[in-house]
Image 1 (cartoon, helix red, strand yellow):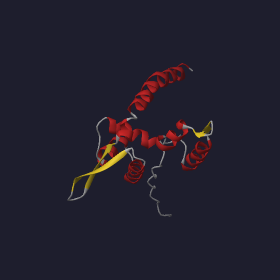
Image 2 (cartoon, helix red, strand yellow):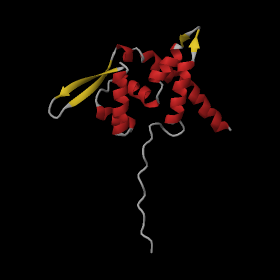
Image 3 (cartoon, helix red, strand yellow):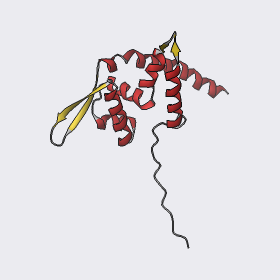
Image 4 (cartoon, one colour):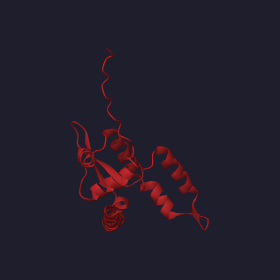
Length: 145
């Protein structure tokens, strides 16, 4: 009788199901670098290259709601600690967030939006409004089908 194999825990992707994976994101970033407007880099493409990643937008949304601590983001987003660490570090490197030490022993940091991060508030509000309007219509249309 063969030994029973234990089911493997599914690895949490860097992207939710149905969204572009890392290879597609790299290709999109390369394409964004090539997009220009009158010989200048396109500000929309450049902005998306910086903040267009799924988790980044959701972390900004939660930070705008007052979350600052790693565990708050992790629980609310149901994101793996490794992915969250990478995203927070990328956001600090991009100047969207600042890391601040709030406890020395054991060392604990919080993440707060910088001026550039806070300036994304109207963008998040616009996405929220668009989603409420158009995703509701889409859901209604699919129910009618």
